[in-house]
Image (cartoon, rainbow, N blue to C red; front, side, top):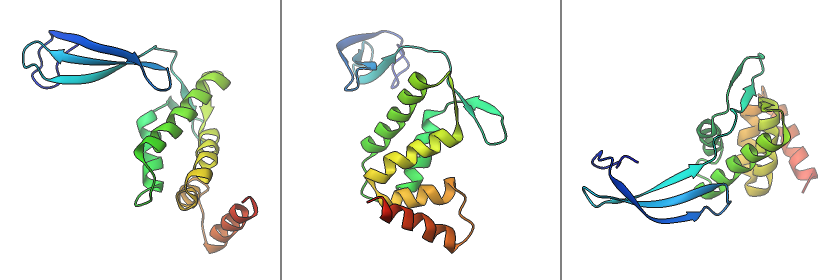
Length: 151
């Protein structure tokens, strides 16, 4: 493993343990050259998960893109980054276990909304406004009414 600080390839593992979700192995390493410590995560490589977009094109599932979009909805809201990462992890795990290595953007969006609904209702409405492509105030009001009915 190459040191992120000095680029040296001679590093040593000093601690290894499973992550909280038991999907990856967390390894603490130390560089033999600069003696700085860093963490790496090891996970099993699986078949690529494809996302089917609205126009029927396909692209690789991008966890960072999902996290970025959720973070936009949660901007200036009291939502921890760990919660956002957990949502992304839940959606990726569900997609890999429930589908035939393909998932639609619609399914991803609905799952994000389901997770945000319990986490932060303002973030839920923000995400829904983009995901459901609200075109006017009535669209917002309709979604707010649905949200209040389900409380």
